[in-house]
Length: 119
Image (cartoon, rainbow, N blue to C red; front, side, top):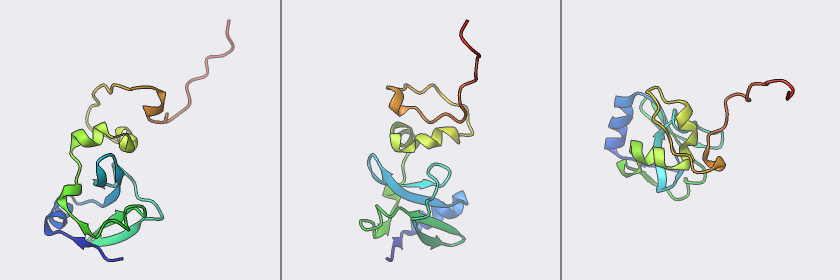
């Protein structure tokens, strides 16, 4: 498969100096950094200068051109449950997240502490 990468996208990748991934999200295909959504072994790799765009195998049949329209804003990333992993990697202070039930919560990084037998 051959993908056409817009010049604006190439410039953004060079400025941010990191790899990106195209994955399925709430508003369609999303172009996000690999810190937000890590690459998978099944992804198709598209070289862009010294960096790589990883294209999800599920998005690959539908994407021919990689454009700036695929870049998600901070609000779109925070509102989409497809990016729940991202909340663990944020470097800046976290703001309270309004969880809407147990299924939306990110996985625990460690099990809860053992408190011993009940009294």
